Structure formats: C-alpha cells, structure tokens
Length: 507
Image 1: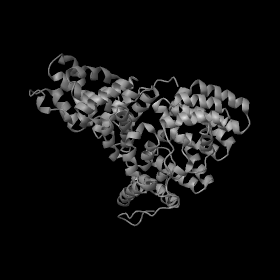
Image 2: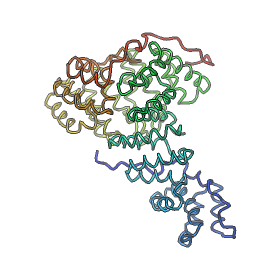
Image 3: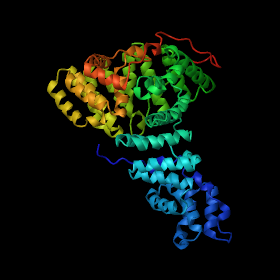
C-alpha cells in the first residue's frame, strides 16, 4: 500500500531485440556510411550492443533528417534489450511524433505509460495498438498486461480495463508467455460488453470459454442473465456435457504432450472436474515446489492440493501448501498468491494457531508481493483465527484496521465480521457494497452451497455465508444481484468416466 506500482521495461516486451529486423533496410542511405553499415550488420546478428555502439555517436548529427526516425527506431528496440531503460521514454516520445502508426513505437508507448504508473493511458494505448497494428500485440508479455489489468482494478478504472479487454479479445490476442491469460481476457471482454448492452457480441465470445467453472460463475450472477440461456445450453445437465468436452480436449493434449507443464496442469484440472481425485494425486505425484517454478507448476500444485482436500487427506494438502511458504518469492513471484490460500486452508482445518502464525508471517515478509485485495484476505484469516482462539481484543483491533480499508476487499471484510459474529455490521456493509457490479461478482459466489461446486471440501466459512443469507435484508440484496446455482447445473457426485482420449497412459 502506498508503494509506487510500475511495470518494468524488461518485462513488457517478449523479445526486445527482435523488432530490429522490421526496419526497412532499403530506406537507409546507399552511400557508404560506416556507422550505418555497422549497425545494419549488427542488427542482422541480433547484436544490440553493436547496434547501439554504431548508432549512438551519429544521433546528434542527424538533426531532423529522414534517417533519424529509422535510426531511432533501431535504437529503441535495442535500448530495452541492453538494459538502458532510462533512455527509452525520450526516444519513444520522439518517435511517437514521427512514426505514430508504427507498431513497435506504439508497443513501447504502452511500456512507457505503464512504467510511469499511468495505467489508464497504457490501457488506451493497448486499445490503439490492437486497432491499428494487432500483429504487434505479440510484442507485449501476458505478465505485463495482466499487471496493468490488476492496477486498473485497484484504481477502480473499470471502464479503461473493459476497453482494453474488448480490444484484446477482438484481436484474439494469445500471449506467448501466458496463453491461459486468454481466459481472463475473454471474461473481461464479456463483462464489458454485457455492461454496455452489447449482448450479441458478448454471446459470440462465449464459444471461447472452455472451463466449466468459468461458465457456472456467470450462471449465478444476474449481470449475465441475458446470457443464461446460452450458458445453460453450453453446460448441459449437471454440467456433464461441458466437462466431457473439456476433459476430452485436455486429456488428448496431455496424451500428445506428456512432458509439457501446461498440458499436465490442464489434464489434472480435467480429472478434478470428473471427480477423479485419486487420479489427480497420481498424475501430479512428481510436482516439486522449488524456487523459480513457473505459473503452470504452481497451478498444478494447487490442483493437487484441492484433490487431496476432496479426499479428506488434509494433512498431506497442508504439508504440500506449506512448501510455498519456504520459497523465495523474489525468484518465484507466481507463488505469492498461494500463501493466501495456505493461511485460509489452515483456518478451515481448525488449526487456528498455525493460521494466525502464517497470516502474520505473510503480512510481515510477503505483503509486497500481493495486491491490496490479496492482503485483505490475509487480514481476514488473522481476524478469524483470533476470533476462534478467543483473543477478542486483538481480533477487534485488527477488525478496526480492516474496516478502514474495506474498500479494497469488501468480501474479506464481511467474512471477518461474520467470524466475529458481528452480523449486523456485515449486513450493512453488504447491502451497500453489492450494488457495485465488480464487488457483486465476488460476493455472490460466497453464498453458493458446497454441493454446487466442483471438488468442494467442507468449509466453515461457507457455512457462515449460508447462515448470513437467512437475514431478510441480505437475501433481498443477494437476489438483486445473483442467484443460487440451479440444481440442474450442480455437478454429479462421485467419479465420472474418463472420455476416451487418443492415448491410454493418462496417469
């Protein structure tokens, strides 16, 4: 909180040196100019240090000649590749005047805006890039676009975030470093289009939704009621047709690519949806928590933990999750959010002392790696643990601090109040907060019965919400914004058969 949020230059572009080859070499001077010839030779060898060594000395001599934009464009790509990030803004801003429609220049415009914490401007520049030069979206990393989206959410710049998501979805952007981000982009675009009354366009994007849990999340929120008939058709009875399609596709992919981390992650997720928890545990048995593990490995470990909990092997699940607390988050930033889950799991398991210790350790040593929203869930765990331990004075003091920043995460604040049996205060907060559509999404899901969820495990926190729903004002507010998932869409209990895949060795 209060820290400057920036997106690093090095993280924004996937291959900063690659665009050098986009230069039209025929437009360079034909006269023998040693510096330009040396730069071109270096560019052909992806030698950015050589490019800059050749071009830096001649920039002051170019004035406003036609060669200057060409030279500066070559330098722009190479400044990032060689770590000379402080020089990028001036060069990019110069090129934005002389080459405003150039895709590389526009992509670096996103970089400059984001690194300066001008996230709305960064989003608008992504919209411009998607509209005028969509191919150059491939220059942006998924990690950085996700970070921009998170910052827009924290700044409550929802319109800008929505415009960005719609533009990326229409361009069918698939980031090479994070292909699964397409799921979030699709969801964000659907949200924005629905809110604008563009239901037909939103419905057209539903076909990109592969994950059954993403559809059921929309099936409980009235924001998407215009899409409910299409969603219900896609899910089918008990969600089984959709699960079968998803599982068949993901298990086929895994059969063809058994050594690919992303394929293992998705295959494990498919088995989880099929209720085949023992198979999930078996196929993820080689997962190792270690510094530097990537996003796919982290998500696979979380799926394994869900399966262990569903099998009531709580000790094993907690032991697995405790491994995340031992990681160096500077080397493994993707693991940061797992600490929030770990602390909550300890509390749900009735291990309040351990939950309290974990929550306080996270706040002391890992808070800088979490969003404001994530940190407030950690505060919730601390408060609920203190309440369960009977340490009322400490719990109330922590509660007062959380209420002061409740705008950052109303669901966590409400849940903490419920833990302390302060239901009247929780009701007052919910009735007001649920009218914010973005907050409503995170509130409606809290009320859903465990049986309506895939791989659900017992939850005392979920029971608090279900009891809370009995209050007339809470029920009225909930029904304005959501509904309980109709039982016709609830998962069928027990194991489902595995759809036949290409290979037979799936576990």
